[in-house]
Length: 81
Image (cartoon, rainbow, N blue to C red; front, side, top):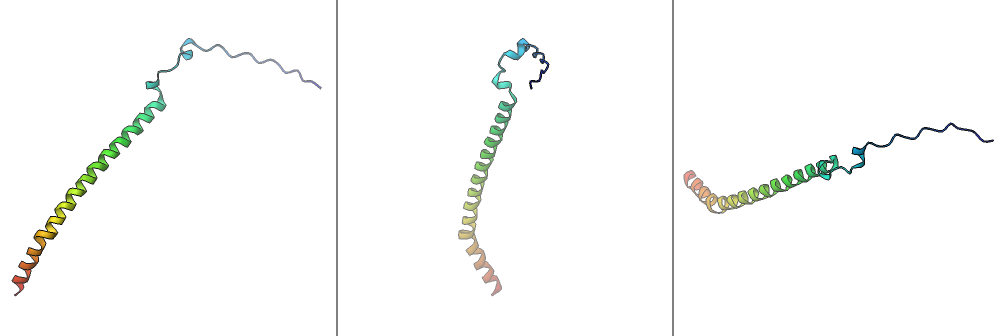
């Protein structure tokens, strides 16, 4: 048993502008990728700044704890006597 289905009309031809490939710089996926790359770059710069600041803080803390703190403890002991 064979069914006779009606023929569907063919789709209209694509407009000439749709036949041109889109510029890669204007695509949404490229812009998203560029935005994520900028965010990743800024995150890395902020991380490097934070690591540098922590290293400076550590150096200052070492200086205070090794040079100044013993003198402060000695002065405190003298004042208690």
